[in-house]
Length: 292
Length: 276
Image (cartoon, rainbow over all chains, first blue to last red; front, top):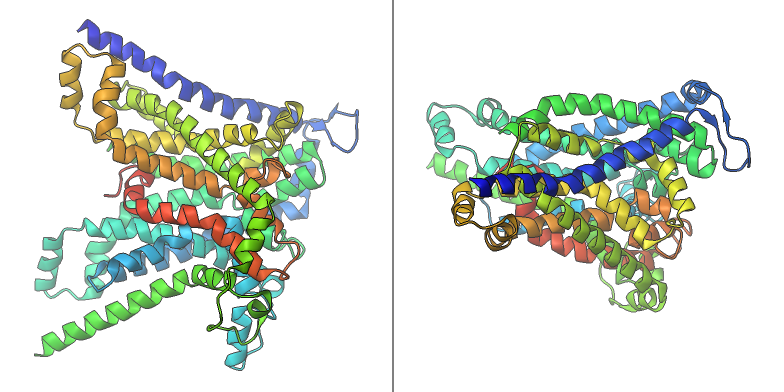
């Protein structure tokens, strides 16, 4: 009995490093951000660090690029989620059937997930979407169409395509694995009762996928809210502010214009927005994940 | 007879459909590797050449620019460093939460996950200034610290998920024999959960190897990993496609192979055991 008690108190010590580190990681930079956000603090202007209250927030929130940034962030997250979840479900159901070479198909399908975002962006930008020498331009000309100048004419669409390509495999992988644990007898029974493929999908497959779908949405949302490298290496937020999401907007304030105060105000707004999403997500899935 | 024919039609179309989708999705990677084997002139040619004399010249050039190896080494040090330290911190913590849960363990786990929701841009400015003042900017140690912190919640969750699946009676038996925590972990738990721990380690490597936000913003040259090197190719746009492809192939190959090996295990960990 005493041994068990000792072990339990040792356990408390074991969990301490993680808790302390994560708490520091959360509190220290956040407190600094809050402090900086109230200052007129620009790295290019030495000396002056006057307290200006909420002025940074006022300027950040009334800057037209803020609204654009929010809209671009939501469009990017929303479009990529719809594409990856929609196509991911269809592809997962397709490859759930037995067919020759399934193992290899699985490996091919999951590959883009492991490609680093900067490589992903540059390969798409140069080799595929280049308006003159890219493969897509050549394909368009083959069928008698005018090649698209992707990053000039359809900048957000291009970013969505690139990011979706990277995240589609993740959705496929999770959903594919989930499908393997489906109750085969139930499926057989439904088929015996004369249920067609569509109603089987709607009434049996989709409910079975509910939980993995929520997991996919949660994890993708965490990462998609702060997409940065793909924009950095392709459009740099342009043309104009057409592909500037919140992450990229704050980056330009901080490290291109050196406006620490303004960037901190923007950063806090991003934190608040992410927390709204987080509270919603944690409510929806977090609890059930921890309680299973 | 009709049924059988319908079945054959279905099988054939599933096979063709699945292979078509897989090849389409894989195509950009295939095209990158193909381009890396062309001459610069060939890489640009229209129509794009499918049949050509492959050359390893680009790879030689990438290697000869001695700094490629420097970037590669930076990536190795940073991702292995942060993954090893992350595991050393996370394993004891996950062990404690999995085997000695308290009333607050679930909230603790959720709180840890919620630190992952903190958008990096929200804390970019203070971290940048802290690093500038402590001379951690453009240092490998700086990136190791950051990567350890950002991946810690995911690592803890994954290890916790694997530990939860270890039958409790085995540990209890050892405990009754009077084993201390360390003996319990070393002789029973680690051997049992070796598979889960190694796939957690692999995921941490993959995430660190591919991380771009912090490495682009906190490094300039001496500690820059491969993600930053590849990003620097974006300026002389379109001039060196074959070399860009060769450097990219070299940058993604190790992680791609790791990913292929561990994909089945990753699902369980990534979804915190919600999908099996």
